[in-house]
Image (cartoon, rainbow, N blue to C red; front, side):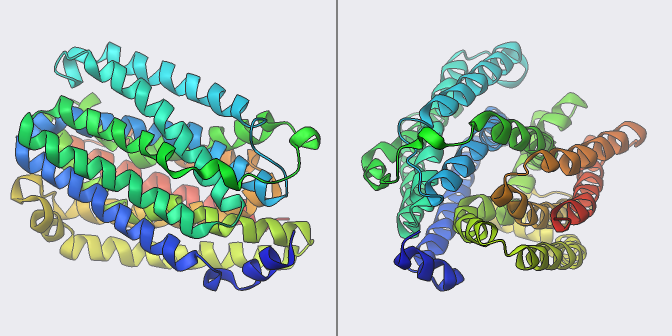
Length: 406
């Protein structure tokens, strides 16, 4: 590691480019919600339902299959190895899996969830390809400590999607056109020439990617089914199209902390990789302990805040037709904070390459959530919200000892 890179890591969140990365993530989050709000307000909750499901499906597939690729590339580049072309092979393998799963799901549910429009099958495949390139690019830039460039990738992605979305709303005002705007956002990364920062040594001595990716994807699969599967679960329980959109908007809005963490965790990982390479296990333990303990407290406070003001926030931003009940808002907010803390704590395991432990924590949370969903009665949105909060709480509880134990 160069002296400049070492000093950059020593400065933590004050490192060059970090403020730009953080601001870019915030701008990206605002632009994402602006896209959803503009689309939902223009075509209404029922017509917007296919975009709710498409967005949810992309979020699940990308975080299960592509976030592990991003973190693997970040870890490799931060360790001084070159990502191109060595890491393209695992990237395209994960992309192919996602395209097959996503395309198959859309095709099977075309009449029930996508208004019978086969264009959504093409869109989910193209979304996987575009976002595979985008996540790979973020991994290269974060590993090379080009944190300002990571911020610009996020801004450009969300800005292009919002800009194209606003144009197609005026021209067509239908859900399918919004899907094409989402596709444009992913491919926007090709305009940023990120590959020129991949300057490490050839990756001939790199460890195989499969164990890292398999462990990470296994844990993330359970995590994202918990985090992003709420609208699909409501649909499976017989909820109306309007209720699906309400749950989608609520969980997506309250998922802001988690979305922000996914955007900026590339800043955290190179620093933790350095601690691991230096053998500073005591500091890694302190970081994990502080995140898990503080996250548990914040989850309770987040749940209370969601109960008190959550419905009003959704109503203010999206209109009263999208407002959830207080119980759903409180459970969603508390569960998201718990999930965010678990994700940050998990970065210590990623830095050490012990990604198989992620599966234990997140799978335990998913099993708890499924059990809660099975035994509970009531309205679909309440059942899903309770199961979500239970699952995320269990996942955070399990992540503590797994991340702390060296």
